[in-house]
Each structure stands twice: as structure tokens, then as C-alpha cells.
Image (cartoon, rainbow over all chains, first blue to last red; front, side, top):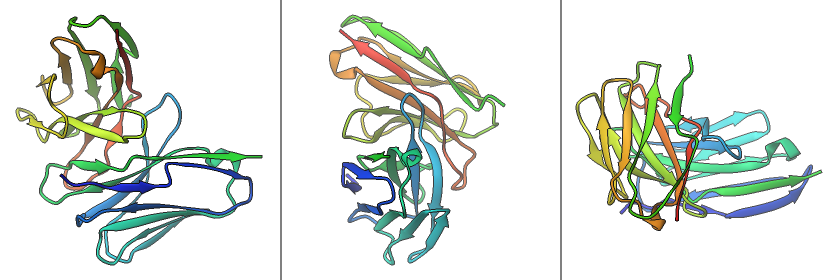
Amino acid sequence: TQLLEQSPQFLSIQEGENLTVYCNSSSVFSSLQWYRQEPGEGPVLLVTVVTGGEVKKLKRLTFQFGDARKDSSLHITAAQPGDTGLYLCAGAINNQGGKLIFGQGTELSVKP
Amino acid sequence: NAGVTQTPKFQVLKTGQSMTLQCAQDMNHNSMYWYRQDPGMGLRLIYYSASEGTTDKGEVPNGYNVSRLNKREFSLRLESAAPSQTSVYFCASRLSGGGTQYFGPGTRLLVL
């Protein structure tokens, strides 16, 4: 069974602080996706990283894929209350019909 | 485009009752997926359909059946609901070839 360990599970910070969320696995993924989910809604894709060592930036969010394509991180700079939500990482396995393995999720709360 | 739609939004069942969760997408996607989401466990794949006419088991298929009715529709059936099936169920679709998975808004199911 492939596992994707996501940490921390909960994070409560003040507005303006920085934070990093980690996803780690012993499996190699063909790509790694990060989703954000609001209460009562389905996950929405933020970014997909494909190449080992790849770094992508989305405004104040920086996503990195590990060199061996087994781990990834999401770093948020100067968090805002609007960043509050559930963040999920998901790894794709080659030749498996697009199946995704999801991490447990990180519940982020940014207080004003 | 409505994207991915799911019905019903909420459902309460008694143990042993049956029901079908409906999912439809209007994006002409080839692949469709059913996930369940439980606190602290991320999303777990129940069944998926890589293309019209095919279905395969995911990580947690026991107690469920699926039907890929046509390219647009993918239903999930609980033949005899159990309290352990209380969860939020998400349907997703993907064009194929590594494309993004798009999620529906979810069905919240409570089995008493």
C-alpha cells in the first residue's frame, strides 16, 4: 500500500507568519498535486509538480517537489486569514488510470 | 459548464438501507472517480473508471458498487448501508493523460 504522510495535521498561526506543510512517502510519484478545500466544497487544484527538484510559485505559495519525487512541501509566506482551509497533497502513480494517493490533509487556521 | 455535479447533497440512512449516489460531468472527461473523506484520513479512492465501459477497485471498495452508465455519469451504490459508511463522498473526473482531477461538491451521508 502506498502511503503519503502529510504533516502537520493542524496548524493555527497569526496573520503575517510563515508556514511549511510537508508530504513524504517511500514511493516515487510521477507527479504531485496540491489541493485546497473549503468547508462544504470539493478540493480545488492549486498546482501540479512533475519534475524532481521542481519549484513552483503561486503568489505567496511556494511548492517544491523532492529530487527523488518522493516528497513535496508547500510554503506560505506572510499568511493571510484568506489562506485558512484544508490543504491536501496527492501523488499520482504512473500507468494507474490517473489514481491519486492523498495525504491526510493539513487544517490551517490563520487568525487576524 | 456545470463541471461535476453530485446528488443528493445530504442523506440520512438507517443501517441496512440502500441508496445510489449520482455523479455527472459535462466536460467530456474520460476518467471518473469516487472518493470518501473522513476526518484525519484525507481522501480514499473507492472505485474508478478509467474510461467508459471500465471500472476498477480503489483502496476501499468493500460495501460499494459502481456503474459507469455512459461517458457523463458514474454512480456509486451502497447495497446495505453500515454506520462505518458515514462519510463525505466526492466524485471527480479527469480528461486523461495526466490531466487535472475536478471534484464535485460532495454528498454528506449519515448512516444511523
